[in-house]
Each structure stands twice: as structure tokens, then as C-alpha cells.
Length: 110
Image (cartoon, rainbow, N blue to C red; front, side, top):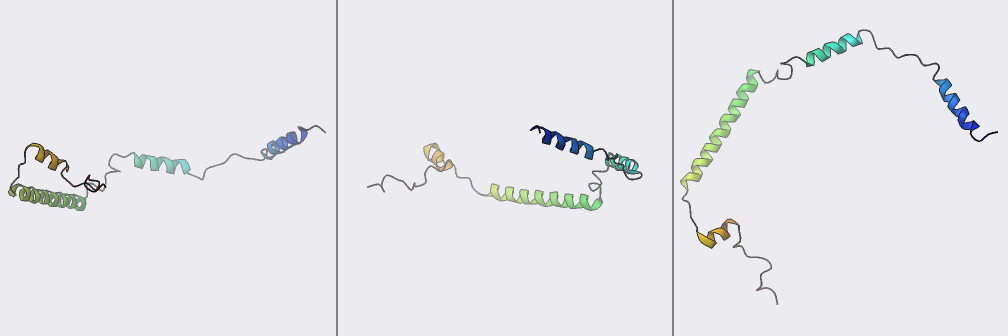
């Protein structure tokens, strides 16, 4: 008995099991239904149907109006406050938060 004979027998058995396979068939009118579904997805207005509804349009306009009013009131409140102008090194240090006390200052070290 040859050492490759068992492997060859297994290969032959596997190939013979494929002899009884028949071609798979789709259900009746499968291609027609698939083509109709693809055509429906290709319609130009199919993906934006919710955008043209009046309820969506009114809700979007109301949201934009509320956001604009909120931004305007915040802008007006900010412009009413007096602006403190600091110049020189103090202004630079304050802008970049460099005037804060460090936890590792030299005074704390022994």
C-alpha cells in the first residue's frame, strides 16, 4: 500500500460526491422582481422623498429661526459688555493663561 493512496482515495470520494449536484434555480419571476427593485432605487426622487414634505420643511425652518435668534441674542449680550484692553506682556500672559500659579513653583521646593 502506497502512503499517498489514502489521500488519493479521499480526493476521489470527494469528487464523486459532487456528481449528483444539479444547477440551482431561482424562484419564479425572481429576475423580474429584482429588476423592478433596482429600477425603483434608481429613480431620481426616491432618496429625497422625506425632504419635500411640508412637515419636514416647517420643522427645519423653525429650527433655523430658533438658532438664529439664539445666536443674535448672544452676540448682542457680548457686544454690550465693555471690553478690557490689556497691552504688553500682561495681556499676552493673560491671553495664553501664563499668569496662573503652577503647582510646581520654586517656592514650594525645599
